[in-house]
Length: 214
Ligand code: ADP
Ligand code: ADP
Ligand code: ZN
Image (tube, rainbow, N blue to C red):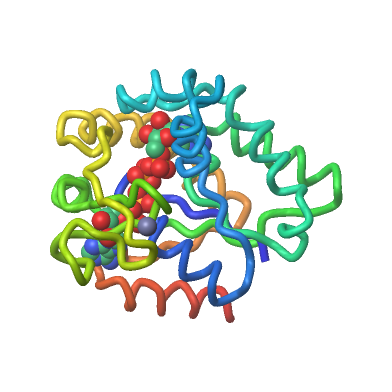
């Protein structure tokens, strides 16, 4: 099962992708997580990506596409995967399709987690990320047992630099300009499914499972 998560920054793609990955035993592949890991390790890729991420801009396609194609050809991705945060532009979607066509495969579902912009700013200001494992929480909607401490690994929780309201506004603008056209792209391929992302997390998950198991 090959699944793509679409949706604005903060729509809940990561939250849902993680649950899908657990339920169906497939890897959760998040380009944002890959970039943040590279930034933490101080790699060249990390240094380049950070310049764009800090501004709320997209990392250029040529730094993203090969990386993802490479990742999905690894052994653990053989039975499928859930892509979170990729593709984010039409050229990225075309690069993915081209790579899959070459090996006689295709994306099965593109799931759009739909949340209006007004809700997004609130979600992002409350999002907390674990510096150690990348786990994601929310101060109101998904709090940790101990404030500021990751439930999964005990790591420290932070507000991501790019989750500051000014940067979020720019990310939303970039989303509407560059990523939203993918909704049309996958509608034309007859694999787009939309879920109402304003419901609570378990309801959103139930809606997604209902789509995957028809
Ligand atoms: P969110 O899910 O909150 O939108 P991500 O963790 O997916 O955040 O992405 C954080 C940042 O990483 C993006 O704002 C962008 O700069 C960069 N990024 C992640 N995935 C991609 C991608 N597929 N193409 C370009 N840039 C990306
Ligand atoms: P994305 O990967 O799309 O950027 P996340 O999964 O990181 O989004 O979610 C953004 C923030 O909103 C996180 O703090 C998360 O805990 C919270 N969140 C996710 N889904 C919901 C939901 N259905 N209702 C309320 N808050 C949510
Ligand atoms: Zn953690």
